[in-house]
Image (tube, rainbow, N blue to C red; front, side, top):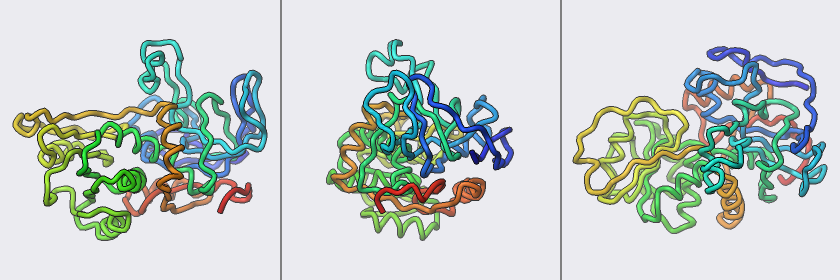
Length: 335
């Protein structure tokens, strides 16, 4: 099979021919139709996340069709569409797993990091951690829901029920979260890179009532802010803009160093919280909610062999919405 392979961090991916994997006990073999390109992939390539499996097939927003079902798997049939997220496995028995916090499991294994992912024509995934996807979305359009959507949804829940929501970094996750927040009746305030008129126009199209640069102040205090950009300086900036009792949610898996800040911007029962990974419950809830909104995605698609180009476009901020590798556009499915 063709695959884009990371052989060493800080190096471009290489197009290689690899043996097609087999469905072991408890797993599904998927013929990959599409795979999202996520900022976490950049953190793996750039060395921000250390000790990945090498060589490694990146990609944890996988959409494919079941081609083989491993021993012991029930509930999945050949030909069924399946989605594979970042959380690829957990121990199932630790204090986190037994209290519905499998996202914090110390033995967790992650797709496209510990387990080969979807920058390839075939992928194997633990059947227990795969999702059925809303049928109204095409393979390419559905791919970003598997990380940008899921992490965004978990971050939105962590932000509480406040009316005034700030989103820092209007990329793949924020453009999905904005739709869900508006569906819930919230008011969205979008913060972008200074002077990024295209991102600001994009945010307005998705219902943001105020849009500005990351250093600007909205016309009202916020009840909560979600930071998707991996920039530590945004934490004190967001704290200064939330009201007493407000929450600042850090939604990335990696962030640059957070600078010191005065206590008075934290005082008043403001809180800072991180969101780590996802749980299967997040997926079940989000994929039930998405058709009700209905969530749509703005996607720039690339062929498999252009994965390095997609990563470069993501790194530079040239994308609006999400990047997706259209691995097998001929597999069918909704338009």
